[in-house]
Image (cartoon, rainbow, N blue to C red; front, side, top):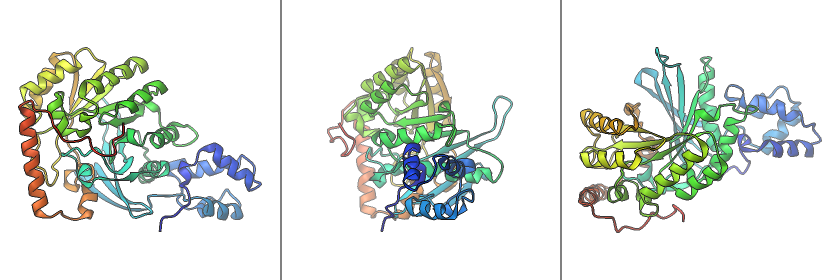
Amino acid sequence: MSDQRPGLSGVPPHELTEWLAAQDEPAWRARQIADALWTGGGVTDAAAIVTLPSALRESLGAFARLDTVGDTETQVTDGGLTEKALHRLDDGVLIESVLMHYPATRGSRERHTLCLSSQAGCAVGCPFCATGELGFGRDLETAEILDQARHAARRLAAEDKRLTNIVFMGMGEPLLNLDRVLAAVEALNDPRRFGLGARHITVSTSGVVPGIRRLTALGPQFTLAVSLHAARDALRDVLVPLNRRWPVAEVVGAARDHAAATGRRISYEVTMIGGVNDTPEDADALAELLRGDHAHVNLIPMNPVAHTPWTASPMPVIESIAATLRAAGIETTIRRNRGQEVGAACGQLAAQRAGEPPAPAVARRRERLVMASAAALRGERSDEPVPAGVGE
């Protein structure tokens, strides 16, 4: 049975104040609750808020859950630099978050970056993504998004450290759960709550154009990242199936308008798949698509994902593509993979818990992907429908 109490971290401040008023409690109690909830990741039980009277602690615990991701399994790899958390939510749904540590270097400060999830599963169905193989479960509540950050913050606080960056690049398509993602970003940015600067928050999308347009109208200062993966429509139809609804030129056009309106550089993510999207033609198409834009490209070797026929592009090939983009005046970074020992690719731990699909189904999937990518490389557009649930 699912617990019907709201997650307290997702309750807006004005609603908490209204609830306190209904308990005949003064508004300043909200500050005490917020301090206990957010400082260092906060408490997970109302009984631990010792600044409140015992009767109010009991009422608060009956009103709301102070932790929605409490049943969590954490695996550590990369010599302690990567921590992958598998969270079991109240209704049994599994989601993942990844905490990545970057030691200080001569050119940069120490960073602690959390990649968190916005949905359980994903409707977009990108074939190189383990989450896409799981399919779509449900949208996460605002508190379920925020409590991933609180969980990581508590782990860091134990070492007298704090989160420096948050990226919405975990399970799910953030712009298909946009209202709750925006509410979570507001709480993360609010100095009275989590207190992370907007420019340390990145929201990713695989190309939901109406969502990008809505963000542009709001004018946020967080970074918008676009999971591009291919500049040619035929290939992107296969790699990012919602491209059949919003083609790549439309996606980049919306991102370009966003950059112009907000003054914020767009980050483009390209997962490099050997023999699929790493040809010289792909590099030239990407350079032409983004030439002159206020943009930065991250080239990311594909993480090994079960049940796909693909592997990462060789590093010399990725470096050659980076050189092509830089020659076109496009800032480009090659991102190294983290946490492969614990299945760093989004959704892999949850997929392992879901069990192995039948061998014939795996074989059919591999054959279909090989045929689809070969057709795409010949310039043939996909005739498959837009994935269900990606919206209009």
